Image 1 (cartoon, helix red, strand yellow):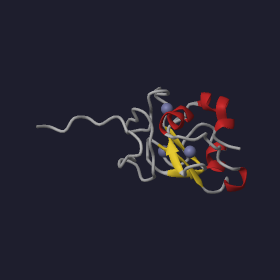
Image 2: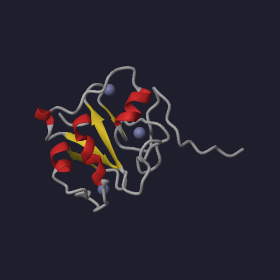
Image 3: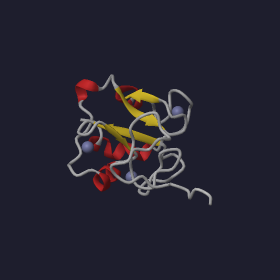
Image 4: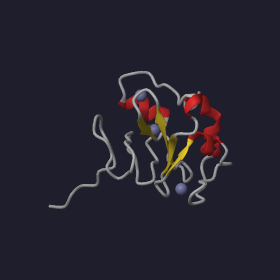
Length: 122
Ligand SMILES: [Zn+2]
Ligand SMILES: [Zn+2]
Ligand SMILES: [Zn+2]
């Protein structure tokens, strides 16, 4: 009997594939999710309310029982973004200054995410 693929993480389980506590809806190996699954949707973002990483705010809404709180400005130097391509973290400041490219591995990030940065960063 082979193990079925386990693409979905259900709360409160965390995803053991990643070096940070992370959950979401149908998360793939590069942190794409049910809501954002384009080739460049490979970041997960830490939320201050529960101190977990999520691929997107809709994953937070679907799996958490509270309203999301964006990452606070005074903590911009702390690790708050995971690159799903190389699975390394970067600070919110570094992500915001990254010009949509992972500073570690060069993976391209979706520039469209900038349209809702206010949901993630205060
Ligand atoms: Zn939360
Ligand atoms: Zn999502
Ligand atoms: Zn990377």
